[in-house]
Length: 238
View 1 (cartoon, helix red, strand yellow):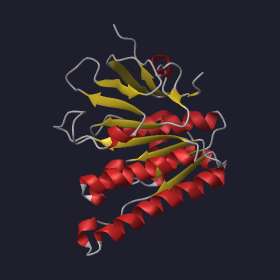
View 2 (cartoon, one colour):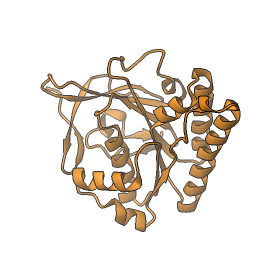
View 3 (cartoon, rainbow, N blue to C red):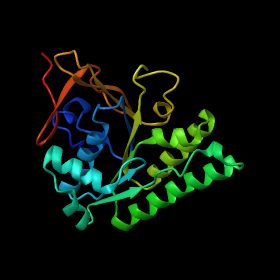
View 4 (cartoon, rainbow, N blue to C red):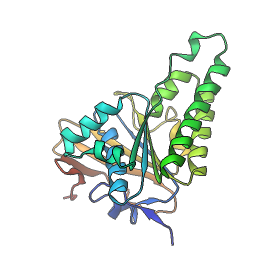
């Protein structure tokens, strides 16, 4: 029997045979505005409700902004969960472009090591069962080298698995780029891939597709989903 972790998205676990595989690395990919960060917050909020501590590593936004976003969109009091040590926010904003220094390799190694050690320290401190990294796109932009980016991401994700947590990472997709292809570095080093899309002209403007999930006979359909005051919810396919 494969042990599963509830996603926190209403209706999603049903098409995933019960949720994410425990201990796996899950990628949530999509263009700007497809609610990737909301998926991550929902995932950690679900864990906190179940008494499973979680770590939110942000490479872009501040803790205060994320807490206020969750309050405004869903009415969730994440500050209370932080005080209860059920959620911990960690800022890992890259300092600047690696190409702006003479010792590129040394700078990259130092940053990647800092990411790994910081997450490990905080995870052990609160006993984290769930980890979020939002987003790895900033790490890729910082490194600016496809081969080194892939090695760095493999190292980070491998270390997340060693912590025994189930990890969700996000990756942005350029507006004119397809959700798959050679440019998608992270897809090849994770266990599951959820792809989000936003089509303003369509009736169901937001959609989710599960393109990969190991050990899971998952749905291959395009599922519409909505944003409601209580959280995200998959809609019935008509």
